[in-house]
Image: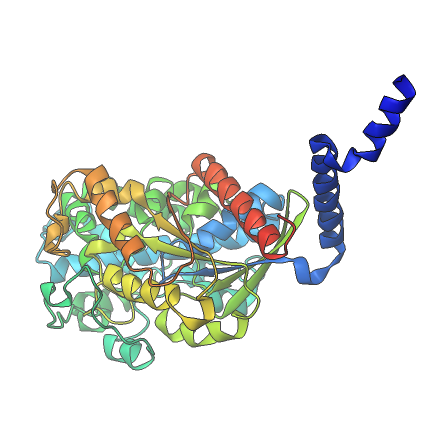
Length: 436
């Protein structure tokens, strides 16, 4: 009897649910092992978004989490570029204060801050950099942010983007008249001061910047209105740590690198191994003039990760200061989400810089830029749900849209977000290949 029962059990083994689970599990493991050696199974993630949305910061986080971080050479390169940007950023505040008619303490006759202002205006960040240690002149020229290097007309002429209406914002809500600011060449004082042949040490420049940042109330008022002109979003962090960056031997820490910004041109490819899966992440240049290059990496993409800086709802494009940055991002997301290239490609949307957004809406009403918003002007949750709902409604395909609220410079929170995203992408890829 016992032997007979045993034979019957073996004959009906295909009906055993545990055996079936094992078969499925073995099949999945076999496919995963094949995937490690099959280049076609590499997961390809296309990272898109408007300029300064935080795309490159997402890649930096991936490097920190999955590729061992940054080399000493890279940390020195970032330190030198940030040092140059610190000087330029303080100059920008001095110059823009004139445009905004903000009185500066450093302009008052007899003020001890006059010398600090003169030192900043006389200084050039590039002159302070050892280009051989910073990666060479080419590296500096390619990646240094230069908000004032081109006049607005030239920036627009080189732009290839076209802005049009989107479903939940009114482009006419913004003043479309160009507000010509005061350019550096229009400042007589700037050139009079620059004619001086005096040179300063990094320490002297750092002390001058520190004094203006901490002691000139006009500089602070101008900084609070930096959404009205092109300005480095991490400048406040730079100013607070100016003495670190003044040290020519300083190596940036992880936070410095995450806060620091270098312009992205063309398409960069980054390779990661995450949980035994091979990822290729393509970071496409976000500025309008770079978008025409995205076409080269469309084929075979596993998922699109679109990064949108929600904090920029009250800021204008670098390429065209008549166009709201958030409006431009919405148009771009609409075109990407519903593009024939990505019709069946899962789309992940990062609503980025939520920390800045939460502070901003308390002093600059969202409704001013998005008339359809009828919620509490200072309610962060209500404002976020407004955007999340409307972004989901923009999807005119059957593909899923996954939305995450992010602060790309926060490593702890991004670790969880990126883990959830990569797990989802792996599952989608397995389903697509028929394994699941």
